[in-house]
Length: 360
Image 1 (tube, one colour):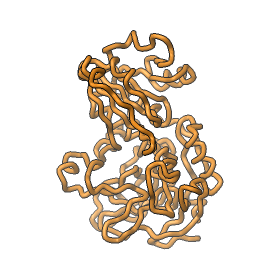
Image 2: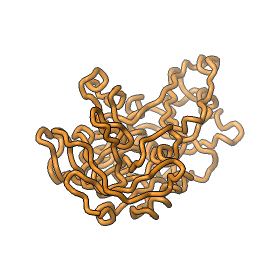
Image 3: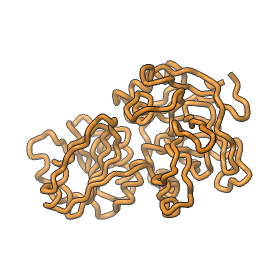
Image 4: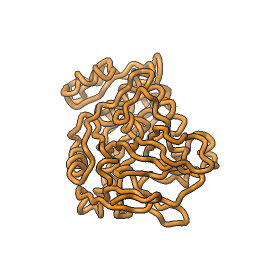
């Protein structure tokens, strides 16, 4: 199934009832724009978002759908108005692929919060009805703003998960003051958390990992954590009352935040980035819990282009590396990878490879 100049070959799912069944198909790329870049994909990370999407956990989707938004590839064609990407350059693409770039949010480097923002896969393109398709494929066509230059120091498979998991954790850390002299906690040392620990350490903070047991103590230390706090042990919270400046919740399941809030310093911040299924209810927090230290509760969504570029440069400079396992793309490989991701059976990210060889 060779792809034409405006086509891609990818692996699509037909619905939530068959979410582990991938079908190799040829489909059209979105209509060419003056600022678009055609990317020949080298590899694509497997994200929890992919599982939630095709399994139906985040609501109705437009099928058939090729997911995947942790993309690394080579720019093979650039539009006539493209200035940010050069032909032949290695770039990364994350979970967003469009915003108006003109509104108040966009002009303040908050384009991920633009009311016209579109996702890399599953979004309906304005005026055409085209449904965007993701990186479990041979090619994508993306606006230049969302193509991030990848430093030479970073292997493609290591950089791929940084496009979503990396940016999702880096942005809230820098926006909420992570740096020298700050004490930062990371809830959940997994696909998101293992990168969050590294970012916080690279930014100069004192980092602590929160966990349910001691199984990941050694990993947390290797990643840069000062120590691990096991929140199932009696009195676990006492040594850390009123001491954290920031706690980043990277757990994908719904976490009861109430026990953590007393650990925050005055006006310390609890920020969540892990997204549960829509049918999972959030936790209720009493004002009585918050008033003791005036703590602030918030969330964060992805990150900006500016932050993505800074993040990749920091990774190259400070040695931040995703812990990855490579899986060859295909019907069988994708089925196994997506099932493992759904069960959190990876340490700590899976990356699909061989896109050009297989998607022919």
